[in-house]
Structures are given as structure tokens and as C-alpha cells.
Length: 316
Image 1: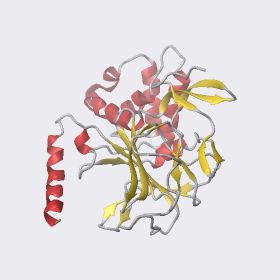
Image 2: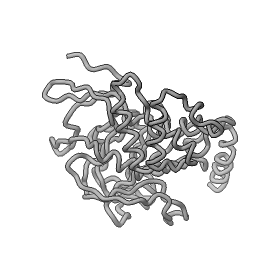
Image 3: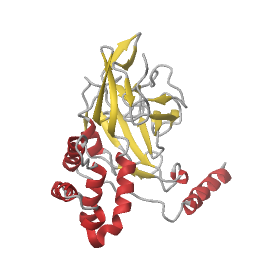
Image 4: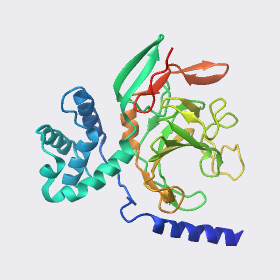
């Protein structure tokens, strides 16, 4: 057993060395909520105009000028400057050398959150361009959260908290923030009952942990399933911190929600994992909640959803 542990540790140390030299190895995502909201609204506002300006472009320009801090003033200036028709290279001069990094990093974080989608209401599909990702908490259910990324945790070993904890009521429906493939489903000694979902572009791995004892997952959910943004995937609880399955060892009922970025598959499960602070993203997503309904003691989404950037509308 000891040999196996040593082998795995050595393997994890060696894997990052296989990552290509130009692969991003770290992202410190600290864009303020106000800047995210302004950039998103500007993107949506210009989406039907001749000059559609992407929020990724705005934020990347602002990040180059501010070292990634992106205060609201810098994002407003980036929008104004991009509206003139000048390219980022023309606008940034000497700091343009950082543009590709910030653009790729922010595209990895935010790339699946804004776009074209449709929701079926009363038999009619309504097409929209806007925020297509959902809050991880189903509509109608309260929660609270704070900026807790990086706080210390001690169970198992001393480590940093790599997500955002959303406190709420036992059994609160948890939904998929973004569509993707269920890559992990089951018990983890740290996260308890948990679900891991990989985005369709494979860049984001969403981690939902401490789900409810006895009934953690949505009905019939299995590893390998495809889910859409807003689908119910599980229920809030307090499981975890135990080698034994189905144990409540977490003091407070909450959802641990995390996002890992993956630029190369060797980064997926190793010491070089890239987890980003999602606190301000959760704030942004609070504006878009998935309506849920209860039937036969199980929750499901109320309104069918299609991501039009990936799929076509169903034919009746």
C-alpha cells in the first residue's frame, strides 16, 4: 500500500512535466462582480448590433492594463476603446503580449456562460441570447454564501478551500450550472456524496459536494450521462469527512461548489490542478435560476432547455 502511495505521488509530480510549454498552468481569476456584470450586459446589449463586442475581449483588454484586477473603470474603458473599431493589439501597445494569456484564461472560465439558448414555455420555444448558465441553487430556494475561497481546511491534511460554500436547507435542489457530461458520481471522503460534471468543451470541471444523505442524486442520474444547464442533479446536505459512505460529518448543511480549469488532460487529477474562485461567478449566476418541480418525490426542471450553441431545437 505504501509503495502504491509513493508511486502515485511521484506520478503526480511527473505529470505536469508533460504539459506543453505553452499550456496555461495557473489562473488567478479575480474579476470583481461589478466588472463581470457590466461586461456581460454590454455583450448582450451589443449582440444584435453590427459590432458585437464580446465580454471576454473586454475583460482581457482590461486585465492587460491592470494586471488582472479588472476594476469596473478599466472594463468601461475597454468597452469604449473596442467600440472605436481598434484591435486589442492597437489598443494595448507593449502590454499586448499578455493578451493571449488573459483571453484564453477568461475564455476557459466564462466560455460556457453566455450565448444562445431556448426555453420551452407552454409548448413554445423562446430563443434568447444572454446568460445561459444557471445558479447551482434551484429557483425558490434561499441560500447564503461568502468569499471563502482559500480558507484553511484540516480534515485529512492541511489544505486550502477550493470552492464556494452555499449554505441552505437540507434537500434543496442542486442544478447543473452548465451542461456537460457526468464524469464523477458517488462517494468521496472529503466531499461526501458528490457529482463532477465536465463541460462540453472539456475546459471546466464543476464539482458539487456534500450532497444529502440517503438521497443525494437526482433520479436515475448516472456517470456518463449528459445533462443540460439547469437540470436537477442532486440535493443539498452535509455528507463527507468520512471514509465510510453515507455519513453526515459536516456540521453545516451546504453545497460546496467548485470549478477546475483544464487546459491539458494531465492537469485533471494531480498536484497541479487549477481551481478558481467562483464567488463572484455565483453572484452573477444568482440572476438566472432554474425553475424546478416536484413529482413522485423527485425534483426535475420545469422548463425544457436547449443550448443553441451546441444543439438544434427539437422538432415537434
